[in-house]
Structures are given as C-alpha cells and as structure tokens.
Image (cartoon, rainbow, N blue to C red; front, side, top):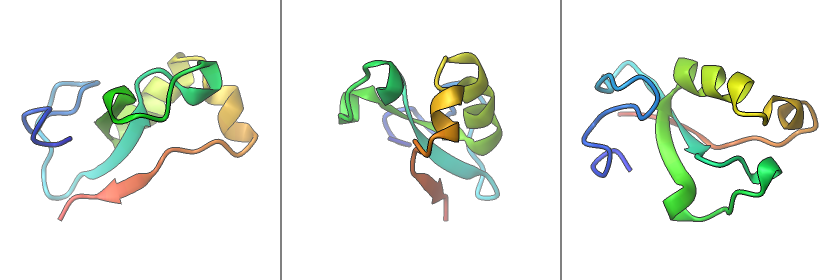
Length: 74
C-alpha cells in the first residue's frame, strides 16, 4: 500500500516518515457496507485515521469493537 500511495498518507497527503505509525483503513467502512478487500484499503497516519474515523460515520462502530489493523513503519 505504501508503494501504491507513493509514500503518502491518503488523508493528509504528507509523506510517511519512519517515526509515523501507519494504520490500515477501510476507505468505505465495513460498518457502512464496505468490503474487506484490498481495493477498499488505504494506509493512513495514526492521527489521520482517527480524524477520518470521526467523520466517516464509522465512529459509533468503533465503540462496539470494530477495529482496523495497526502497523508501524520500520
């Protein structure tokens, strides 16, 4: 995903750095009908993922235990 996104966060457009914590996010949340497929996944910086989750309608689903994977860049 990092290569596909040319090293940039799809939310803020900034390049990832080794210090960033990258998280895999569903572009269309699964709680809103998005598929759990590669084409529906993107890599976001942790802060950006939090911001997107609050605005994309999936926030309430997080409270019920729905969660995306966390990954740290090495």
